[in-house]
Length: 359
Image (cartoon, rainbow, N blue to C red; front, side, top):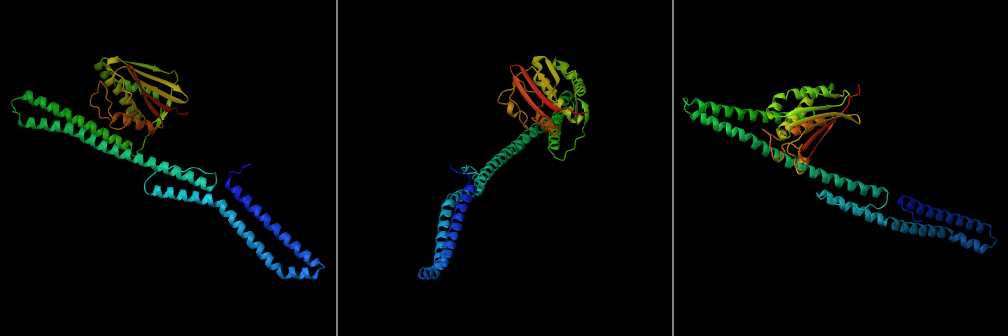
């Protein structure tokens, strides 16, 4: 039977040599006793003169053999240690594309496994750093573009106002209205940037309390009655009979469903209906906001909650900043919930799962 554990092999070899050494000592001791007891004077004298030499010779041979076999035993381990050391040097130069073979389950095997894990985590950290750097650069570029567009328009119309004859009140009024609208768009964008920045602050405090998610949804949808009427849409509520209570910051949750319903109206006018479903599943309140407009592309779905990402939909909404859904995702994360989006054919579903509070 082959012994795989290096510790056990080493202990067995040491035990064998130890036993051999002890047996040798016992044999020498017996020889000494034999000599003492021997009646042959010449034999006794010969062994008496050379017994120390025999003992030393035995120990020298024994130690040399023990060292030889021990070196043979650890030779592979030394090579393995050198391989681990060389890989660590490669890692130190910033190359994390390594894969140390795992040989055995002893300390060196554990060390190799740790080195592989370390290299993998460093590689992931570097990739994450690159993604964050790219996201930061994209964010700066997008912010610059979106801030510059309304600002440039506002400055242009203000310049027209300055140059327009005051007697042409009709033109002045139109320019003022456009400039005011652009200023409001600019304010909305800055407000969203501020809100997103605030929500990403780990020190951001929330004021949580037990609230009925159904009652909160009814209050939110009432605020959209004028927008629904203008869009020619109707809302339908499909609520569970249970009164579902969640522990959450009501103002933040209102922000979540405000954004989702606003998106559903902007992109779902074609479908005429806005459905809101509330149900219970595995200790969670499940809220679905459903519209029946143009579907979201499969290429867009994985990135929909990333900051500043705008889906390439066929029916763009008004004043989209690319921050609304990122804010929604952040608020849901703060509450320990989950949000997913599904879109196919003419149906798009945003689903929010929140843990039900134990009353």
